[in-house]
Every structure is written in C-alpha cells, then in structure tokens.
Image 1 (tube, one colour):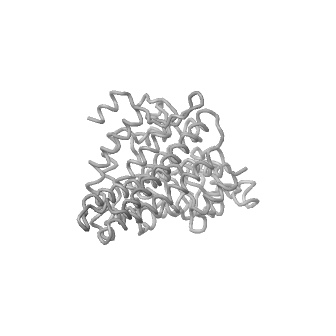
Image 2 (tube, one colour):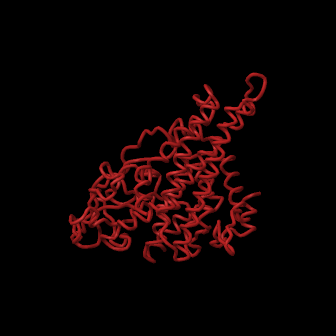
Image 3 (tube, rainbow, N blue to C red):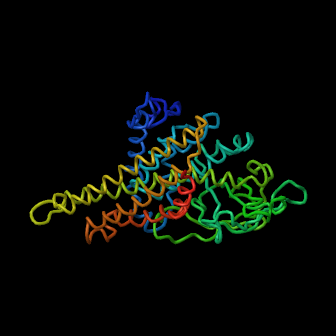
Amino acid sequence: MLREKVFFLGIKRIKKVGHLAQHGGTVNFAETDEQQMIRELVRDFAESVLAPTVEHRDQQQIPPSAEWAAFLDYGLQGITIPEKYGGSPVDDVSEAIIIEELARVDPSFAVMYCVHVGLCAMSIALHGSDEQKEHYLPRLAAGEVGAYSLSESGAGTDAAAMVCKAKLSEDGSHYILNGEKMWVTNGAQAKIIVLFAKDVDHPDYGSKKHGGTTAFIVESSFEGFTVGKKEDKLGIRSSDTCTLVLNNCRVPVGNVIKGAGNGFPIAMNALDNSRIGIAAQALGIAQGAYESALQYAHEREAFGKPIAYHQMIMAYLADMATQIDAARMMVYRAAWSKEQHYHADGPRHSKEASMAKLFAGDTAMWVSERAIQVLGGYGYTKEFPVERFFRDAKITQIYEGTQEVQRIVIARALK
C-alpha cells in the first residue's frame, strides 16, 4: 500500500523544499507531508525486508544483494539523480530521513545506500560532463550499484597522500591506472566507481601533495580491474568492504571528471556531503539501539516492577532520548544547509556537516553502549540487536574522516 501511496502522491515530483525553513523570522521544525510519507515507506521496507535477514547477513558477512533488488521497487535509488536521467529527486532532509530509517534496522544496508546515492551518483550528477551523466546516471537510477574509492593503505585521513598513479596511453585514448585502493564500500558489488588517482603527466604532479589528483569513472568490467581482499570487520559486516586492484587498468579519457588534476576539490566536496549521510546513519543506529532498550526495560521486571521505572534506568532512557533528539536536529540542519548551498547559492556546509557527524557519531556510540547496560547480560549476546548496534556504531566515529578530523574542520571554520 505504501508504494502505491508514494506514486499516487507523486514522489517523482517532490520539489526541493527546505526542512527547518525560515518563515518571517520563525523556524518550522515540522516534517512535510512528503517527508513523513517517505519515512513511513522506508520504515515499512526496513522492517518487512531487512529485519528478517539482518542478523544472518551480519554473522555470515553476506552483502544485501537480494534486499537491494527488493528495494528497487520502492524507487528511492535515484534520489540524487535528476529526473531527465531517470532519477526521482527528493530534498536533502528526506535523504537523511531515508538513511536514518534504514540504519535504524540495518546500518550495513544504510551505508551501501549512502555510498550509492551520495558519493557515487551525486558526484557524477554534480561534476560530470553531459556525456558522462547521460551514460552513467540512468544506469545508477535503474539500480546498478555505485561505489567511491579515495582511500589507500597510506592515504586514509590524509587523502592527498595517495600513490595510485594514472598515465595517459601512447595513443591518448585511455588512462592506464596502477595501484591498490582500500576500504571501498560496495567494492565487490559495484558496477560503477568514482575513483581517484594521480596523473603523473600533470604539471602539478609532485609539486604539492594533491597535485595531479584526478577523478575517474571506472567500471568493474574494465580491463585491468579486479576486486581484491574483502575486509573482515568488527561491525557493518553485511556491508561489502574490499580492496580494488588496478593493474594497467584502462580507463577511457572520456571518463575523467572535470579534467585531469581537478579531482581533489571533487573529493573534498563529496566528503562534505557524505558526512551528513554518515551522521544520519549514526542517528539511525542510536534510534534502533534506544528503541530496543526501551522495549526491554518495559518488559523486564526486577524487584516487583519493570526496570523502566527504576530511577537509574529511567535516567539512562531519558538521557538517551535527549541525546538522540539533539543529534536529529543537528543532522537535519546540516542537510538543510547542504540544500541551501546547492540550490540557493548559500555558503559551504562543511562546518555543519562535520558538527553533525561528530555529534551523531558520538551519540550512536554512547547510546548503544547504554543500551547494552540496560539489557545487562542479554545485551552482551547476539540474541538482542543492541550488541550489533554497538559494533556498528564504532565505524561512524572513523570513516568519512575520524572524529579528530571533524574537530579540525570545525575549528578552522570558527571565526
């Protein structure tokens, strides 16, 4: 019913309407009808499709391929892609809501989605040529999985230190890429990857740390491209995280985004955007852990009454709910700021994105730890989801820039 409701109300015609929009000096915190509808739609998918398989996939490290195929029926895989290329764009707060609701049940699926719509599709939509958009965006909108590859073994937090090299072929038709990329979400599933390497022929190569950094659109079918090691991770174990091996990988020159040497600003802009997605993922993790603890606290009795009515547990639950509510406001404000930047020529949203990621990541970790404490010994077992939420929460303090990096970004923006 919800899917029919979405198309009846015209999800593909949802306009870019600002959440937290200002009207005559006031701020409206209410979700729009469309945002509420999207939340209900995604919650229905998460609870009916993701929940039954999430624990098994986590334990066995199985990517959610079948679940992704089911998700395509909901029409939300192209929310950062213009309609002319087959997308169904929504406002940026709605994007955060989608990720939040997915992560409330399955953070692994949430990050798969976040990378697909944000780091891959949005990077091409914002920076790609008309030809690149026409060739790749319809495929991404149709459900081919997208990925993004910036990090290397010695270039994680220090993204400019990458050593993966690109050299123009003798006939000038292709770039030849060599090196290994690491920590690639969707690495084994993705058909289309936005990938960064340094053009050794570029005049700036070697003159500065990010000199020659170039963004490429790489297809998994390209000659010289292989998927390497799959990481055995603490959390988000159903998320596909791999090394990519480039051995004389041939990439057509037409797949360079914005020209050789212009990749570093593209990478930094993508991180601004994706940090909001990770903040939304952290928010969903916190919400899921809190709901599990709240339900358990009302069902578990000790000393003649549910533990939810014992003073210490009441304090835990109150603090958890308050932290989550504060994080939600920061995440939505960051999403709104992003929208102003792209659609209303507003200021950059780097500070707001880093603040949201910093606070929401810490909230996810703190709330999930408190949830385990509320459940006691049961919280330490795989019988309840709080154990998984606790493991999944940690990565939100690490990827897309560690919490230490977020503080540097925030401090530099202070005036």
